[in-house]
Length: 89
Image (tube, rainbow, N blue to C red):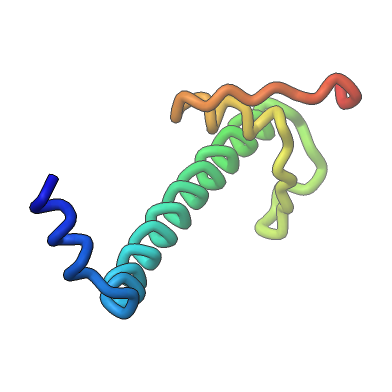
């Protein structure tokens, strides 16, 4: 307990601010990578679902829309359960 108090006395506000900046950058980079992976997985689900459907526009300019049908299986791979709100059902 005494050692813990000594450590707290040694840390001042400036050290916390400078030590916090790299930590915030690391967390934001991890969050960005996580969201990017989910979006990429949802895009792959959309493409496989779209491959089964016969659509008119099959060129390079094909646009995709992120839907809950694609997002639910993408986030389920990471253990996140998403349900549609009852007013969208």
